[in-house]
Image 1: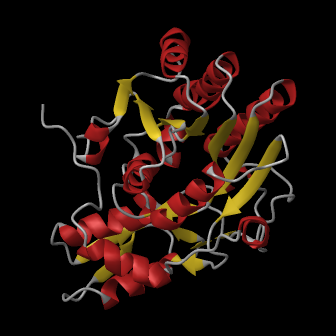
Image 2 (image 1 turned 180 degrees about the horizontal axis):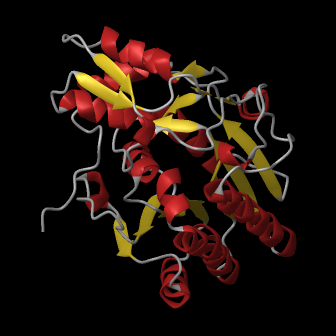
Image 3 (image 1 turned 30 degrees about the vertical axis):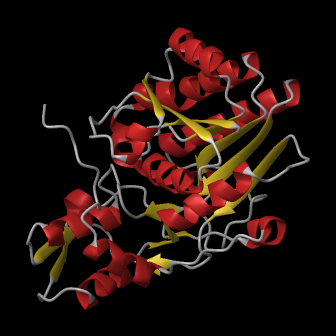
Length: 315
């Protein structure tokens, strides 16, 4: 049985990925996470090997890799809430760039076969059109820049070693076990807290909202995918743009109470793209992957869930 190491295993995507992998029982799973936000591990994560380690701690990370000898690495660990990244640029670079190099260095030293990296649609130059993988890369802020540098590091290691690497440019992921107050989880939390006057930012921007289950499915397919290229990039989205205003409508349709949405300046981003939507033809054609959950359905599921945010430890 192959061994799979997941960085950020206690995070949003990591938690969902581990739950799904354990159902299939195809891999021995190792999770590496610094538990930055002090979440309470789920019952699923108690069935795997977990190390509490910051990926910038090269010595400890190399020890873990040497001890566990993973065949495949899924690198999810990152700081990815854009307002946080903007307010703490040095911390963002340390985790998202230096940390990624540390992971690739440990992978190189321990003969890892494949690395799957969670990049971001934030690497693209703003456009009114759907983004293809070969579009111009010109991030607007430090989060996107840090992810683009991560891709460069991945590409360099793939050229210099036998590691096959894949960068997934994730669009706006939402679903259970979220760890940051992005748009959908923030609105859902306000509703779950019993509020009827809901605050939000700009109403016009369109985003490609992709359910975390569909993202996990893409990662699982790529874990088993035999790639011939040393480095590959795929967009992971739905190919459909949805405005913030439309998200608010979907939420109201699934609530018993009448909701009032107020756009406030505090929640408006200074440099906000008006459009960020994926062209997913490449991943469809090469992997046969396609999204199964539309955003209207996904929001309905989230409103019914008790796991819309990660539970935190009380101690």
